[in-house]
Image (cartoon, rainbow, N blue to C red; front, side, top):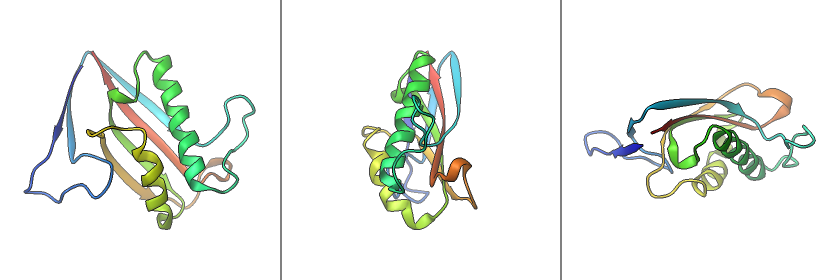
Length: 130
């Protein structure tokens, strides 16, 4: 897969671990449903109210789905982060950033009224594979 990051000074620079846009050329698109911080073994919400821990579990869940599809987080070209409180943006950004290298995917972050099972964060992803 060819994955090129688009960056232009004619638009605002990314203010976090995301790219303005990503050009993806590949044979397969993988659309991952939103993941919340559930332990896959127990089905219980993890993190104990710590949104950083919740974000790590969400990213681990996304990684597992992508692995099952035959790719890794490196193939992700776009994510959407859903937060119940944008005041948690910095904490979520810090955890999220540890899963992507110097060319993170494009991203949107939105505040929502509520998420399933009382989660504070949900993330979905689009990946492209050769």
